Length: 236
Ligand SMILES: *Cc1c(COP(=O)(O)O)cnc(C)c1O
Image (tube, rainbow, N blue to C red; front, side, top):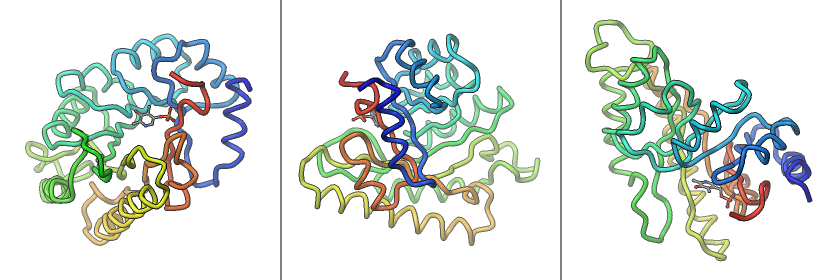
């Protein structure tokens, strides 16, 4: 099947409240354009330079999502155009995004990446680290707070949800357990956010989980955003 056919087939199976990010990393621009011409407007990349090159070359109504691990010193290269950063996993990174967003006069949406898999991985926050970041953001202010808070505040970022990756395994029960766990953290965050009166957490609505191999299960477990690459564009 062609890229367009793959894309339309997957889209037809997604519930209305689930957003599809077409993960186009390593793929050439003509492949992305085939998906674009079939209606896709959200693309996910995991390397900042590759994403910037594609952004420059492609139509400007595309939303570019950074789904990979982000090095602090490269944030500035994507801040002018990125629309959602999925893999925020430290306060230092969040502060750099805030700083660069301010320079660009933008407010940038971010997801906090939570570590849910059983396997060893360098990336993602554990629940304690997640709480620390949330506490910081909640007590230091956010996007719409008063100018007085400007100096220490986080006015130029918005935490709109969470992202996670399940263990790479065939064990459906384990994947389900991990997704369900992330959903429960997400629900708690949404609940706390709505009660906190803090703008930074008022917009929590996105739960980014699920890839080609496990997105159906992720949706059953409450995902609102799936990141699908190889099932659309073929293997890498
Ligand atoms: C590559 C990647 C995906 C897409 O993976 P597929 O298995 O090709 O669908 C999703 N999320 C992240 C973070 C990735 O790096």
